[in-house]
Image 1 (cartoon, rainbow, N blue to C red):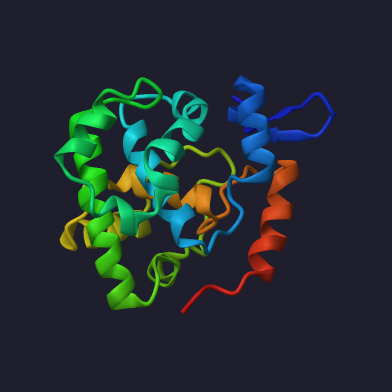
Image 2: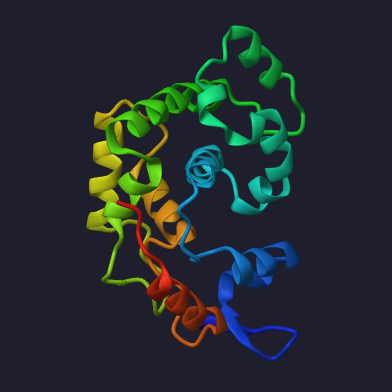
Length: 202
């Protein structure tokens, strides 16, 4: 399989984004561009956890519903959720109604609040795991890396759940900690420029 496919505008893109127009828009404007906003980082890591066993297409289609259900992914508010909120979410047909993942999101929100106290911000913590070497850039066949394994291990040590190495790497790819756009993809250079101009939070 080729690493890229031509889009309707003639530009080549990562092959995975040809599946749907939503994928193409997400690929062109979000995937791989560096993010320093704590809410967006928490949102993405949470949604990657919800994706486990599902497709990103299914999660992306429900993303606005998730945002509405989880207070815009304000983890300070989510950390205060109680059993009534769990039941509310379990009855929300607009999201993935999985008790384990919902309860993990609430626990992770608490861990996120602790991380902000300890590290200054989520961004300051996550950007320590920026990956300079991009072993999967040509064919995107890598689902984990030593860096994602290390990130997953540390998050679990801090009490986070649904943050395995594959989830961690998908998060890193999406949030710009690694540029995994395929060689020849029109977005690869755009992401490289955005990363070069980005100052990682400390």
